[in-house]
Image 1 (tube, one colour):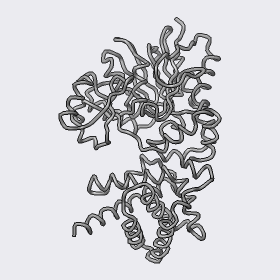
Image 2 (image 1 turned 135 degrees about the vertical axis):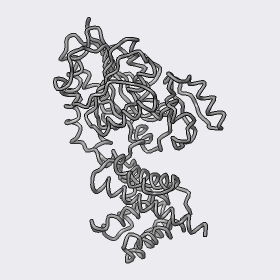
Image 3 (image 1 turned 180 degrees about the vertical axis):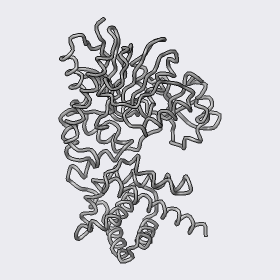
Image 4 (image 1 turned 180 degrees about the horizontal axis):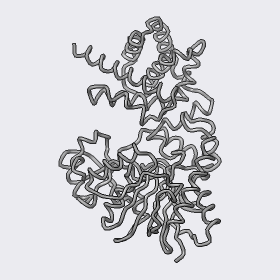
Length: 439
């Protein structure tokens, strides 16, 4: 009876994973918004399994599609995309998870009935058994897109921008993301929080450069983290944590965070220097609500403005800022391991539009910066069009702008700014450039 109940739970998780994939791949929704379907599952274990399946398929989608194309006599019809995604889920389990082969086949076949397509049971059974018989040959695909499981346009961009590092970037993108914590230094020291983890037998390592960062040996639900509800700690990648350190505001500074939600960097700035006047601007009201919740949990306060960062006239009161963080919207090509849907949703044609928005926000931010002030430009991208080129354009168009070199022991120095590539010191990929306004 216990085995049947366990199988039923897994089947429910697979069904919800199919729903997530339909939302992302057919409807173009982000994984973050599509995963709400998983919340209907009653147990945390089911929800985690469903998201493991959805994330895994999106991570290896291009390889899975290539394998499936070899196994099907002809592509499934559009109305049968649910079957296509069910097969991808099963192939992912056979490739990457420890589920026994027979269990994967049995569960996938049983799921065809739950999808209202019992006629497909034989098809699913045959495809999966054929893969099990000949998996080594089927997985040894030569096509670059399938082998690296990245869209061709992105591979081309990475080769151009990072000719010596692109394969390392791609390999990092295909890894599961680690779980980094940011200790709230306003409430507790990192060493004291580390001691709390040790008392509960939770293994961790310290980041050598991000002063508030702890890496958990194994990810865990946030509600199980000691002191999470009391604001002692947050979940934030180590690469993202470096931004607040680099901006380094002083007591009494008026600080602006543009494109601020969900608020990790806003909160970190306040944790490192509570005596600042913090203003955070975010375009989307729903995302601003997330920032509000984070501030409340951490016991922090800031002035929040829901507005367009690229149009300062619509909201700015004319009082200049000592420090500005521009956390620009971008391709997110540096955080693919954390958001594998980016591989499927982002297109080459998006880059020019994003670059235009980035420059608009930068120029508006420069107008709001005090003479003698500093601006930090940050993206979670590894593409030079969004990074160095944007900084160069700002410098060329503003005679009062100069670069402040980022002389650190991490990352790669660029013509302008510094790049942390995905996977370096187990962090995500981020670009940083610091600029000063003549006083």
